[in-house]
Amino acid sequence: MVGWPIVAVWLLWRPGTRRERHLGVIVAASTSVFAWAPFFLAVTIPGSNVEDTPGQVERIASLPANMVTAATITIVALAGYALYRYEDRASRDPSTS
Image (cartoon, rainbow, N blue to C red; front, side, top):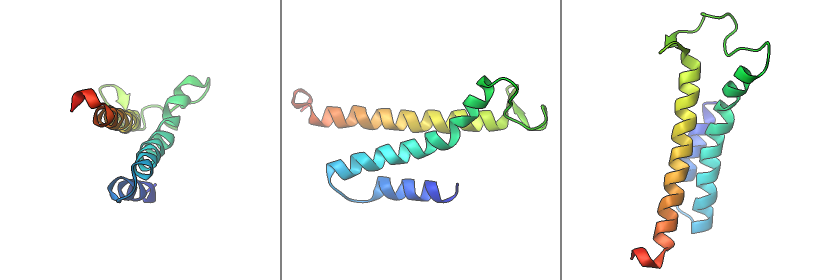
């Protein structure tokens, strides 16, 4: 888990063609989503939970802290990708120049 953020930052900062940068953004965003999104699946499966013993994990706004972390990282990754797509489309649209 420590190595993926390092790879993601490298993919985002490295120089490259437009296509290489686009792939880097996709991979950087998807690694975060793939790592944290399974927390949400655990809530939907009967008999499973996001913590081993209910109440064991600290709570933030009555939610387990790991769920808040998972939601925050997933939302930031998806928002970053959406902003990238918006900026990429705007830079290619000749009517905005």
